[in-house]
Image (cartoon, rainbow, N blue to C red; front, side, top):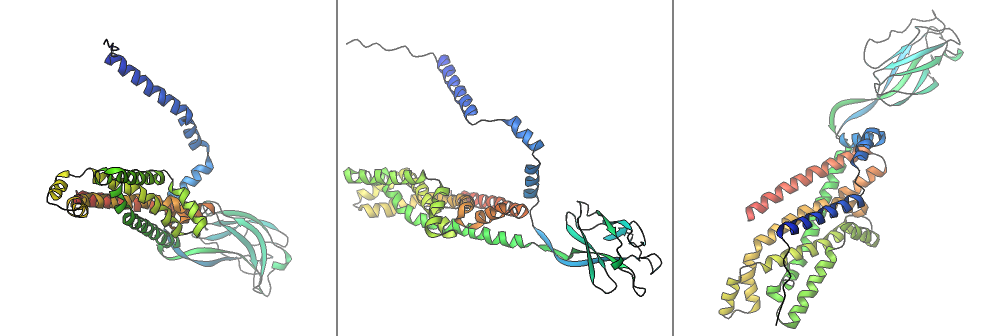
Amino acid sequence: MNTTRRPALPSSLRTTLIALGVIAAYVIAWRGSQVDFPRLFRALATNEKGRELLGDFMTPDIVARDIAPVTLQLPLPVPCGSAPEGEVAASGPRLAPSVACAELREKFTVEGFDLAPNTELQLRWRLPSDQYFPGPFIATDADGHFSAEFEARPIVATKDGVPSKIEVELLVPVGNPKPSPAVYEVLDAIVITIFMALMATTAAVIIAAPLSFLAASNITKHGPMGAAMYYLTRTFFSVFRSYEPIILAMLFAFWVGFGAFAGVIALAIITIASLGKLYSEAVEHIDPGPMEALTATGANRIQVILYGVIPQIVPDFLSFTIYHWDINVRISTIIGYVGGGGIGYYLAQMINTSQNNKAGTAIWAIVIVVWAMDFLSAEIRKRLT
């Protein structure tokens, strides 16, 4: 019987075809994902709102001081000569009128210096009777300065030698700096996030560990029943690993209500599937020698697993579990964003209410906790292997 074999492609031509295929895949991916780096840099240069938002995120609300109302006053006789003139301070928060005194119906300019920046205030007269006569609303600029026109109306005239005063009330930070309320809120939310991940990981370990033996071919895949159980368990792991945690979090948030419980359930389901696959692969890669030795001595299936399998897989199981707790802390911040509780939920609330500095506090807390968890899990896994 004649069999003709097709000549193999030269290795250089095969390499060239593979390279062309890879290049074509990246070209299609580039176009499909609409990558446009010049657009990104143009947006950074021209999008003022985006730069402002980024600046808020980079300047988190961490330090606060107690706020106390402070009233600035400056006597201004109306008419001139009816009372002693006020003296403008040389520095610090101060009011500085363009005139030291004024005649009735005279208009003049009042400036404020070193006040709270970007703050809305009201300029007013404090009358000799200690009542006040409202003036215009003003807004300070980024340097805490304002300039407004004022009028000396008859109602502000000096009475019995007591002049009216130009007055503005502002809130001034007092006392020593201390952690802001946002810091305490973020700490509370981040602790919830860490323990959400812990509860979800613990529940997943309890369920995934026994299921992993059913998904290990060297343990279960013996005979028709064993093969059916093996493929059924593997299918279960594959199906639930395909679901995005954020989708399950939204589902359970509507089912059991928004909060940490919904997040824990969603995270636990995903973790069962993920850990189950990792555990089963660890079981499949054990050394078969101890199992064969125990079987030769007449040990039953349970004894073989207890004494021949479990001692080999404990380090891997612990390593995978700690690593997945680290992963779950990160995922918890995402599922919390859609109502799953924890720091993600807090972050969503702050962004939705435009409290971007507090959102920045949450973002930096997430970065610090994820870094710490990554470092600790790596160190623990290093000691276990």
